[in-house]
Image (cartoon, rainbow, N blue to C red; front, top):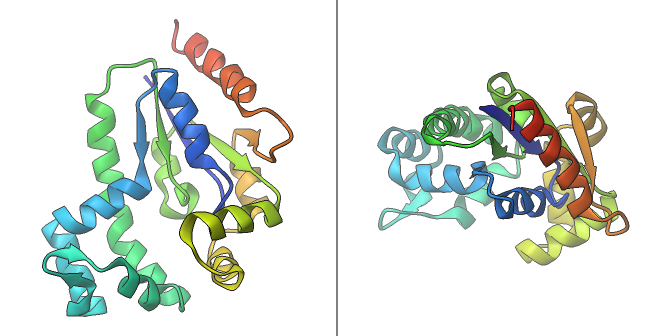
Length: 196
């Protein structure tokens, strides 16, 4: 079974691309959703977060995402600290999930595939690329945040050009090129490589 990653910067549309693969019957692991779940379910992870960011990180056992975001998005050292707890837990969870799948290939969608080192456990990585202005607009709409907040988050991410250079395949999501044909080409390739 092939293990495929999908990555891209904030607002690139990697979730949309992952959803198309899902519609094609491919199992998709969404790292962002998984990390949010693990920050509530994984007791060791919770303890590390509370120890590092304070009791206010949780309210009645529920992750206080707004509080945590204000703590980490202001400083790269703090986000690195949080990631040092979350990434290993998510990578282990993804590996367990992958072992349970029965498909020609699986998709792991994650913003920080290279930064977390999870590319080591993947056969290929697909990069989803979109113009910066479009990415900012999408993120502002999706997260109900300001342009400045999106741009601050972008500065904390790996340079987009560098990220795309590391990818094996690129999907352009600029609202000009159609997404589905690009996904179908890769889908056919992965099925063929898996012997189907």
